[in-house]
Image 1 (cartoon, rainbow, N blue to C red):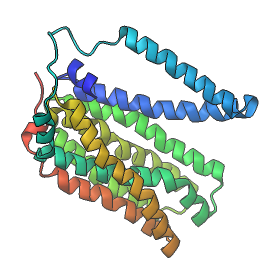
Image 2 (cartoon, rainbow, N blue to C red):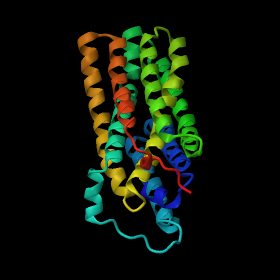
Image 3 (tube, one colour):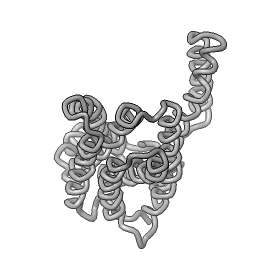
Length: 276
């Protein structure tokens, strides 16, 4: 995120969208290839192949990637600036927003398959296909919404709040579904709203932090984002164990985006001012 912040200004949202799409695509590719490699050659060989590819790409990156355009040396972030980020109201609200969003996203990714198979007897293969449709929605949404957030006529704040509210509503709708056909219809929209907010929030984080402190701002906010990712699967699992209700489990997930949308309402214009 620090490197993207130094390279991109007016099209930072689109850059964040492409970046976050790449991570999702990598997960899809890995899940499509690693099990086959593991079955054919053993899991050790599969991990060795992944390790070699990663090291080679690291060498390529060190060789060709620059910290930023040649505009002179980039000043180091001071300790005072890092501590100032903790008091940055916009950054705190963006951290809460991402935490609430990922609460639902990771909760659904962790439990979506199991809830469909346990509650309605959907086969694991079909449940996996539904989750693939969810992933396709995410792949489409990330670059698209990132690009939209760069347009002068679009407010990243409103766009992110819309994603959060739509995500919560779509989760509730998914909780009302009872057939595989219905799951397939709703799943891509869940992917669109459940992942589409990420590049928009990430672009605003770099704006709220400033170019010099973009890396520190990303690290601090990501720490809170991941707390939502860690807690959601545990709590959603406990809720389902107590209630055995598909609907209540999805409603539990939807609480996160609603809290996130409320937090993002408090963002000031400095968090999403368009770059020249």
